[in-house]
Length: 134
Image 1 (tube, rainbow, N blue to C red):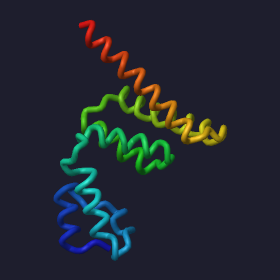
Image 2 (image 1 turned 90 degrees about the vertical axis):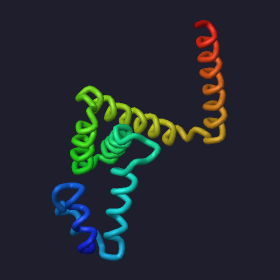
Image 3 (image 1 turned 60 degrees about the horizontal axis):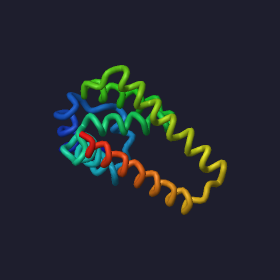
């Protein structure tokens, strides 16, 4: 259970203390909230809009209805359109799909890393050539 101080802070941030907070074990309860506050809700390198989309994609890949609902609403608060929400879920599904292919085919990781490096080099060359043509 979170401390009274943390409970008050949660209520200030969210307007209430969600019932799931009571599911946090006491040794980690305050810390768990601090991670949400500082990483997900706080000012970080990623804008909150991007964090909401990352969280939504992860939630969809995990098939967690709670997280999907929360992070969809979070994304909408960050002005992500319905199309953007759908696209984020589709990107997550695509990553999961190809992860299954790579693992099931037992693609060698070192070979994959080398191929990816070559692909990145090629794309960077194309972008540089395109920028030079402008």
